[in-house]
Length: 140
Image 1 (cartoon, rainbow, N blue to C red):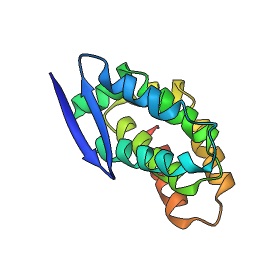
Image 2 (image 1 turned 60 degrees about the vertical axis):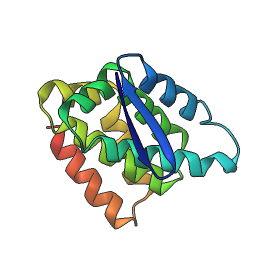
Image 3 (image 1 turned 60 degrees about the horizontal axis):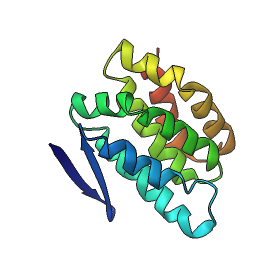
């Protein structure tokens, strides 16, 4: 079985068949591609942030499918894109807020360092700074 979520013209498939990880691997394999794919990166990170606000089982899929690692790697690849950083931080915060095991998975994936790097790169982006502080609070 799988669930389909449509957000920002992006379909993300979740399920036992590994479709979620395959979708993320496909989307984020474009990390070093030209600017044309940056809109895709922004939309993909927004979709992941949206998904991470859902049920805890979706957050578990994000952890078990290496989704948190993909989010952190995307943050590293697109440090200059404030919207990618903002949505990625939101997703990490939502996952970490479930509990200690989830916060630990975010931390182990390099989430804390990625959040600090985003804060440093976008010091004048108030919304990002506020979201980053909330995310770091979720990781304590």
